[in-house]
Image (tube, rainbow, N blue to C red):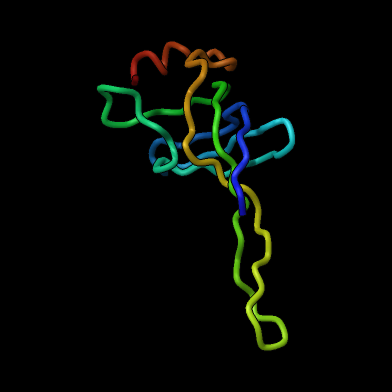
Length: 102
């Protein structure tokens, strides 16, 4: 499936677990894994914080399911990859946390 570009807001992200969720205009609870986040130059990792504005490529996840003896790709939701933080200031008031950990 072809990706499409979107912008959205980080609704949840756990540094400890390495994943979170983004809401875009057309899709809610888009999964994001730490491996899908583009690191800033000079940083070994990139943090996401609730309320941040991000840009990303959306891919529809699929699962191969057996139907009548053949496997068919069944849509399973959306995943964000190539995530870039557009505005590091959180709309949730977590900007100080981000600056301390960036």
